[in-house]
Structures are given as C-alpha cells and as structure tokens.
Length: 549
Image 1 (tube, helix red, strand yellow):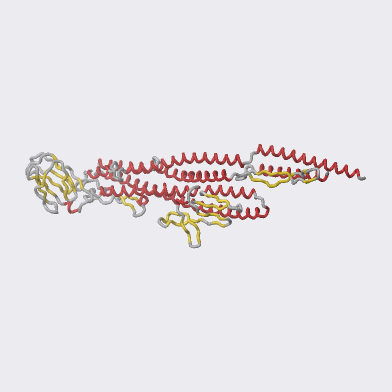
Image 2 (cartoon, rainbow, N blue to C red):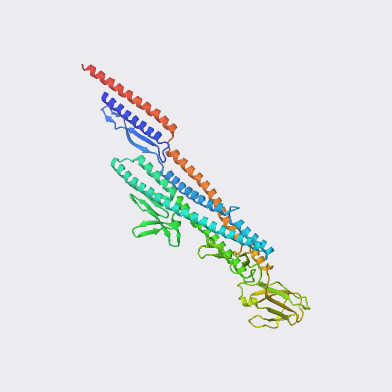
C-alpha cells in the first residue's frame, strides 16, 4: 500500500511539474508574436481493483493543449489583409494627392500664370518684353507638365520596386510554411500529439502572409495547410510551393506584373485576381488611380496643345507670318513630352492675318466686323488675296476676288455671318446700293491683338470635352482627393475591425499574466502537497521495515 501511495504521489508531483513548466512557458512567451497559451490536460490514472473496490492510481497528463480558435484566427487574417491593402493604397494615393493639390507646385498656378502672361501680351502685342514674358510663362507651364509626369513615373517605378519586394516576401513565407507543414507532419506522426509551438509559428506566418496578400487556408487531414491566394491560385500545397515572380507587362514595358513561375515560362496573373494585402493594395492603386491620373494628365497636355495650337495657327506673328504650332507633344509620352515649340517671342501669333475695311465714300450705314479666320487655317494665298463685297441693292451683294469664282446676287441679312476662303465676318446696319467692303491681308498689324484675345479666351472655353483646362485638372484633383479621403475613412474602420478581431482572439488564446500567476501558485501548492504525500508514504514504508526487525 505504501508503494501505491508513493506512486500516486509521484504522479501528482509529475503532473504539478508539467503544470509549472507549461505555465512558465506561457509566461516566458507572453510577448512572443503569434504565441497561443497552452494548458496541461490532466486526468485520473486507470484505477485498480483491490477486491473491496477500485482504488485510484493517481493522475496522468494526457497532452499539453494549445488554446486557439481557427474561426477567430481566420477573422484576424481577413481583417489584416483588408487593413494592409487599404494602408498600402492610401499611402500611395496621398503622394499623388499632395502633388496635384499643392498650391505652389501643382498645375493650377502654372495654368493661371500662363494665361495671365498671354493676357498681358494681348494688352500690348507689339511689346517684345510682354511677348517674352508670355513665352516664359509658357515654358513654366511646359516644365510643370514635365515635372508632374516625371513624378508620376517615379511613383510608378516605386510601385514596381515594392511589387518585386512583396513578391519576394510572399515566396519566402510560402517556403517557410511548406517547411513547417513538413516538420509538423513528422512531429505529429512520431508522437501522435500536436507540436504546439510549430503550429503557432505557422499560424503567425499565415498572418504575416496576409499582410502581403489575401491568403485562404484549407486545413488538411494530416494537419497540413494548403494556401491559396487571389481567385484560388495555389501558393502552398503540402510541402510544395508555387513561386511568384514579376514580368514586364506586354502592353507597357514600364510596368511589372505578378506572374507564376512555370516550367513553360511565366504566366501573368491579372491584378484583379490578386486582392488584399500590401501587394493587392499596390496593384489596385496602380490600376485604379495611378494609371488613370497619368492618362488624365496626358489628355490635358495633348488637349491643351491641340486646341491652343489650332487657334494659334489662325493668327499672324510680328513679322506678318501665319502662326505655327505654339506647343509640341512628343508622340506617345503625353505630358512628359509637352514643350514650347517656338523660341522667338516675335513668332507668337497675336494678330489676325486679315483686316476688314469700309470703303471711303459709302453712303449707307453698313458696318463690317473685324473678322476672324476659321479652323483649319486656309492656304496662304487665300489669306493674302483681297476680297471685295459690293452691294447691288439694300438686300443683295456680289463678291469678287474669292479665288473660287465670284458669286453674285447673294441675299443680305443684317448680322448674318459671311464666310469665304476660310475667314468669316458680319455686316450690320443698312448698306446702300454700290457700297463696298473689303477683306484683305493684315499688313503691318503689329498692334493687332485679335488672335491673342481668342487665345486667352481659351482659358474659360469648354476646350476639354465640355469643360475648361482648369476644369479638367480640377476634376482630376477632386477625384484623387475624394478617393484619398475615402481610403482614410475606410482604413480607420478597417483598423477598428482588425483591433476588435485581434482582441477577441487574444481573449481566447492570449496569455493573461494574472491568470498565469494564479496558476503558478496553484501548481506550487499541488507540488508541495504531492511531496507531502510522498513523504508520508516513505514514513509508512519505514514503519513496515521496523516491524520486520
């Protein structure tokens, strides 16, 4: 009986030792990322029959259990993936938002400065200093387009770099998870018990993986994890990994896409198939914000150049030559290739190439407008050939000098637009019979500002598909700003969800030092009590020995 009591005490002592070790392990790893508390699962040993009944044989430890909720863990992973994606997107878009909306380095002040320079020149078109100032403001605008395009390109290159880095991190996590799958399988197969610390390490790696990309875990019967990303692409299957890499996009040599490494070559995975995490946020930022912003800026540059050039070509410069292109846009580069085409301020076509006149001696009250040149500009010969309008009655007129025939007997309506040879004008009032009006070259029109006024008028014209240049840019700034604020609000909400999910998991699985301190006292007392049992058993055995002497 004494030996039975001794073995019972020994089992109690061993159980208390396991409890103390487990509690100490919990306390030691309270700050270890991904650690889940463990508890010793203790049960009564198999009782033994003694005739008068079954007598207990002490206790035994069946296992050391890891306290972990897969459901709560999956919630944390999902929340982490969402939060990381939003943070990544928000960080990138704020860089564009700050650049576009900057009151000094944004495009708005450059646009306003350019048209202010053109307005000052229009007030004094013969002044070379005024023309030079206008040309300098145009150079500033071109420089601003180029610098903004360059900044967006730098951001794109930064995204490429971060995509490459994220892919490398994802591959590293995948390899570590696959190795842990193998180690866990071997350890569990040998002992039949789960290797808790290895399981913690694997779950922490899955959480870290979700910081990079949304990953779905499918647990296998042997305890292994199969990991899938995106729309179901495998990343880890047992001990095998499917490596990711980067590849140049077929449509854009400046852009890196995520691809699978296969024996037959790299297979690009669409950005829409790789959501969540830092990588998903980067890809979404690039496709939904960066590339549209680049396109909008390019469209504004090419649209401004095209419409401004079209009007400039309808004018006449200080030397009497027809205006040429004011801006150039290198093919295929948009805002990055936006530049001023002229270098001499005399080449600014501020004047109109035609001049209208009322013949001296007219007896009627008819008056002719200054006239304007239509788009596209007519050939030089037509602009230089004078045209005469001769009224044959109060309601009809003849035209001579058109170069395409001399129409006669045309009806006259006061204020109606008359167009020939690519120019237009109106005659108002009541011309008399034989009254004449002429349209001819604008020789010596150095003080003429008619085309300059039309050029400055483009500032408020709906030249960009129903809106002005400034309106198109403001729309871009507004879209980026609204999206940036949306991401900040959504990111804050996602952060709260992640915090709540993490707290719920910690409440279930985390180490509570107060609770562990209580356990220490409990196991210490159990250890002392077990020692007392063994001491009594030893004393009883000594009594038996003394009786036999």
